[in-house]
Structures are given as C-alpha cells and as structure tokens.
Length: 432
Image 1 (cartoon, helix red, strand yellow):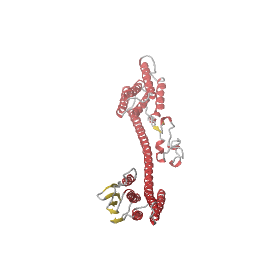
Image 2 (image 1 turned 90 degrees about the vertical axis):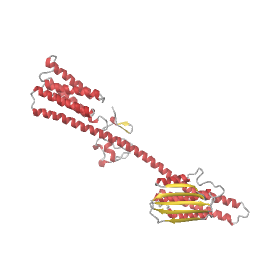
Image 3 (image 1 turned 30 degrees about the vertical axis):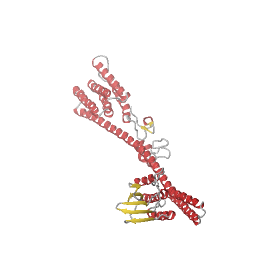
Image 4 (image 1 turned 180 degrees about the horizontal axis):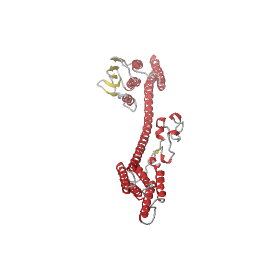
C-alpha cells in the first residue's frame, strides 16, 4: 500500500495532526516543525498542509468501523426476524446471504488495496448479499449492508468501476423492494437517494485525499527547490567573493611586484640615482592603492557604496602614472542610470584589463572608451604597439578573463577579448 513519506520517515506511522495542533497564529515553534518533529525548516505557510493526514487510505479508515458496525447490526437483527437463519428453505437462504455479507465485509476491511479485478467481485458480493437479505427479510435492516460497499467503491476503485458497483446496488435494491411489494415508493426513492449520497460523499473524500497527496508532492518539490536555490546562492556568493578578491589583489599586487622588481634592477646599477626612489615611490603608491581596494572590497560585503564607471578615469590616470604609458579615457553618449552590479562590472573590467596590459604588454599607449548607448553601456580597453612577443592578457592560468566574462554574463551582457592588428582589445557591454 503506497505511503507518503516526509523527512525519510513514513508519515503513515506518525500521529495524524490537525489545525488545532498548530501554535497560535499559525507559526512554528523554534526547533520544532509544524508536525511536532525536531529540526524542521518548514514555514507557517505550509504548516497546515504538512500536518494534514497524508496516508493514502486516510479517508477510508473512518469507514471501516462503520462498515463492521452496520453489518453487525444486520447480522444480529437477522436472528430476531422471520425467516431467521437456519438450515432449510428460506432459513438456509438467509444463512447463506449473511455469510456472504459478513465474509465480503471482512475481506473489504482487512485486505490491502489491490486491483479492481479482486475488489469489484468482493464489493458486488456485499451489494448482492445485502439486496438478497432485503428480499428475504422485508422488515429487516439488510439495506445497511449496501452503504459500506458503495462508499468503498467510490474510495478504492477507478471511477468507472465505482459507478458500476453503485449502479448494481441501486438496481439490486430496487428489484428486492419491488419483488416484496411491502415498501412504499417514497421509501424506495429515499433509500436509492441514500445510495447516491453515500457514493457522492465518498467520491469527495477521495478527491480530497488526491488533492492532499498532490499538495504533499508539491511541498516536497518546493523543499528540493529551496535547497537547490540555497546551494546555488552559496556557490554564486563564493564565486563573487573569488572574483572580487582576484580583481583587488591582481591589480595591486602585480603592479607592486613589477615596480619592486624594477627598483631592484635599478638599485643594482651604479648610475641608478633618483630612479630608484621613483620606482620605490610607485611601489608605495600601488601598495596604498591595493590597501584601499581591499578596504572597499570589505565594504562591499557590508553593502557599502560600490565603485562604478565614474572612477574609471582614476584607474586610467593611476595606470599612466605608474607605468609612464599614455592612457586616454573617453566617454561618449549621455550617462544613464545603471544597476549597482552593472556599475561594479564596468569598473572591475577596466581594472582587470589595465592590470593585464601592465603585466603582459609592451604598450605604447592605451585607449579606454566608455560609451552609453540605447539600453546598454559599453566599455573598451585597447592597447597599441605591442612588441617583443608579449603573451595575450589572461593567456596564462589566471582567472582574469574568466572572472570578467562571468560578471558580464550574470547581468545579461557579454565580453569579448582578443588581439587586433596593432595590439589587444577587451570589450564588455552590460544592460542599462
């Protein structure tokens, strides 16, 4: 018999909860889930559904004692009527139908849910036995044996098979009452209406059970989706932090290393003179800039103000001051409002591209262009007159181009990077 599962435990073995068991206000006590188990993360919006009885045969359980009680009344009363159960004639017939009704009811209550091929004959046995008893004992309560079978057919069988059992029950009762001729037409109609009512109520209970099963399936899917979303969010945050730390450290530390290496080489020369001091000064400025960038990165984690395209001019000026390579910054178009992530992406791409030029290129000049176009902002960093067989920016094992491309694609933009006839160009666009 299928059973709904929650948190790896079959819910059919747990207590059935109702809305009365929920905390006041519909909330959930800390550390305890909506159904009283420890360690749940369920929220109040799903508490009522999670605590509803979820076993597949829950609507059927209430009918079992009623069926046994109804058949018990029929059997006990049958011994007090005429003809009573016996071994000859009509008495024997009463005995046979009572055995059939009792056996069919016990089988209906005790046997697990199976296939219609097994259940339909059992329910028809109950229906026909009860109808036969109505015909034999006209003043007895034999018709009560029909109702549990009709309700079970609505709950357990496919719709067509359930309708068949209900139709046979109505027809058999009508024939039994019609043959005896001792029942008024009004009584017959009321009993037929009772059969229809039992079938309708059981059908609604079945639909409630199916809707409840569907709700629990949706809850399980929702929990899986939430877990996947949380995992994706954690992964995305780790990637974002990795990009930020890479951009900050690569920009400052690589320039610092280059300047310190230049200072070391100059110091080894006898005629170095003031050039050593200049190289050390540049290294000092880079170290100071790197410290400021690290502080800004930490501030970003606190949701402080993020750098944006308005600071690209500072990057270009700092690059020119540190390397001595002319770097021109140009803005075209009317500036438009950008999301904070888009602003940060333009700044970080410019920072990373200039760092790559510093590390890999022998540039004569660098052009940085920021263009505001319809619905987007475009940034291009291009160096000219590369010589001495330098390696393309990001061509090693670093994460520069990968990080820049990830930033752009997460916003719905794109990044392109590649050599040109006179150097190397990095271009990115983000939606405005």
